[in-house]
Picture 1 (cartoon, rainbow, N blue to C red):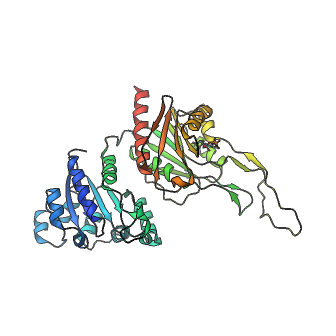
Picture 2 (cartoon, rainbow, N blue to C red):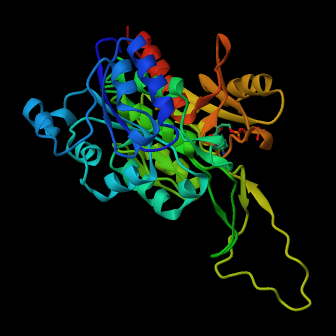
Picture 3 (cartoon, rainbow, N blue to C red):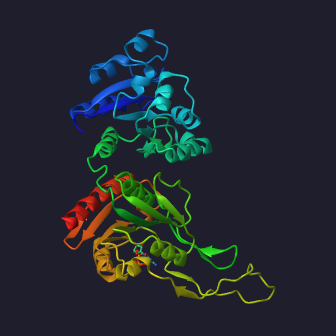
Length: 402
Ligand code: CTP
């Protein structure tokens, strides 16, 4: 990312001190940083520290005539290759989600024509508040990128999600954005399955599992950002679809298989969905009632189609077929056996034991199993797992085409 420039908007939160370290890390990597600070930010770190580290003057006031003479706020908002908001406070998120522009930071965010990456930081209750979660959803669907927040002890003494991502994580997310693999998947057709499936017992009851869909959505997002024409076949989940993907919503495993087949041909398919292995043999047309004196009903299950294995044998088999393996013991050995059993090219394996917090969480520790063995990836944000996987896919497809 040497030679790139970042417009860093520093919001008013205790995490602002970490932004100083971020500036240093970006400068070390050859990135120039120009900063805007909100009024509240200047209560936590001084503009002088930011200016000394960035080597550039710091912008604070929307109505400063000098600033307008030197550079208008519109020009400032477009002067960098990427806009980074760190810390992104609840207020800054709300302003952008609502389209407000009443200070320099919010005006720059609204006026920019560049991508925006936010690193949220706030108290756990503020983060979990429906208003913030609503804003997050809106911003994501507007194409704003996010890194963090992480979970942990907070300055206010509480514990939970809301801690700003560490400067090195934000720097990696920025690096990721600038990676030359943007456009690396231009012309490639990708298929991703994600989320759980729901298998109905009757019109109101179903069998399902705890999959959040986050990793699959992050992969679809990364593939689309790298330029792939991406179809995301998703079971019922609570998260907003990434921008630029074709979303096919399904409920059952059989619907998921049909949707996948309709999306073929594809050059690469990534099956992250936690497909229910079985479904009730009979789905009652009406709600099963509790008849007085009647025996407790038992549910007979029958096997669902295996989508990954079906794609592996399909006459339109994607040239690169990737499965996931959610394991709770002997992760690599089980996943390697699964790769052969299912007939896919790679397996991304992870340990989903409850203590790992991976299911439903924001981070993941995966092993990539290929014909050449297992690679152990470090613990990463799910978005970063997606980006790295997209980069590997691009590299491999390019190799195959050559
Ligand atoms: N998968 C699928 N269709 C199914 C079951 C699984 O496409 N009916 C895919 C998943 O999307 C994942 C891979 O197969 O990519 C592994 O799924 P997993 O449930 O971990 O494996 P199983 O075959 O169910 O093996 P086991 O339950 O014994 O671990």
